Image (cartoon, rainbow, N blue to C red; front, side):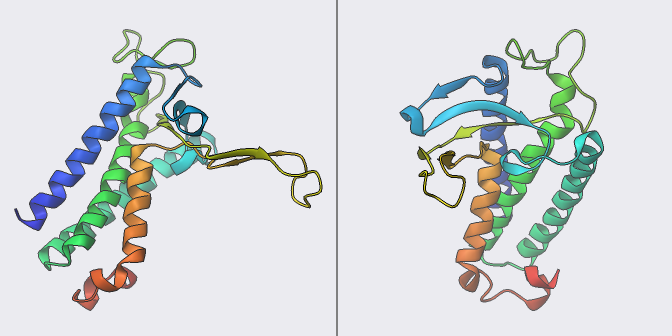
Length: 210
């Protein structure tokens, strides 16, 4: 199988898994509802966010629109870079890492672009797909579905601590989705194995030269 086919297959598999899980969460849970998988240390916890990865926000509706447009531009840039890597017959690990990043970026823009148009809200009842009265938001103003929550450490700062004495301390606090995880894994794999990945890569296709 060629590197191009492997790249496309990986992107499609991640997108399929990401969207199936998000649609299941949307149509079976209400916001804030959770399903414990590993007790109190690992669960599906349904939230939605208007902004970036891991639940970070950005400036209301105008910020949401700007972020959505930026995501689309970023996907186009990643797609161009991925195409150049494939054409240059770059390291397969690098091609797959960039493919994973692209899949994650596409997965979240699907939520932002279309979920508001095709789902009802999830405040009191699980969302309805293609509700008769229309969705909860317009194009590019949908909310991103997050669900993975792993509070591995859930304790309090000691009373004598100079940092937030007596206050709650949770690690890992952010709730994320498969797209977020894909982007993070892709970036970290490039950082960890960059010497091997870029060893035989022509200078003009290196990330640093973009």
